Image (cartoon, rainbow, N blue to C red):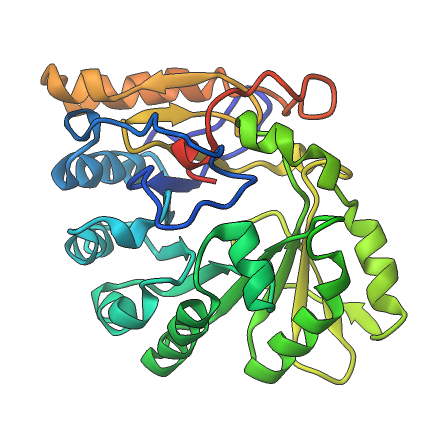
Length: 326
């Protein structure tokens, strides 16, 4: 069986699937203020098209799929999509990234349909500050997290994008929150993706600085955690909490990159920080055979770049983050 191995010897086994570019939040570092350029519905892939592509990726060796957006739970057929994807042979790990605003309603159904674990974006525990960052309702997120726990989804990972002028002073409180609720915590550096990402560049904080702040309050020991992502983990000594550090800017992890991203319009992005891509929607709608589509994917993977250029050319990625799928 053909495998997705790029020209640098990296095996691609992880597909991040953006099922919609729409979102019910407006995080300032993700979607620019006043943005109106969302995809037209006729250009977005149908559920059957997504399922077909994931089946083909599975046949090429991908076994991990994460549903992203935008916000995946705004898609009306999301439960049916999860159920269909979970039935594809070879997909052993089906997870979701969500803002949790609609998770209270959907958590039990997601679990039954086949979602094994979730990542939840949570940048502040202060309701006023949270609204400034996201224009969303913190209480709905907290209720969603509780519903996910009650539904038996595990692990639940909290993703906090750390920003100097927004929430750096909350990193210790977020650790306490995750200890109390038995969540895994991951800190993430801001990235200059699109106009919103460029606007957030002045908020950038190296996670080495975050670690130094936390070490004044907590004692850590090395740890590991199952998953396909790039986080490097520590455990709070004497506690169950694992903390991941995702450092695309200060300590990039490109040499071990194992993922590609598929947008809601069927564009395969080979690197979050580059423009390299393959448009799969035309192949789907021109009735290309499975083999033709797989050959196009294999050729694209051979062009996967060695690394991103966020530090050298931070302005080159002009697409909005919600279009790419995080």
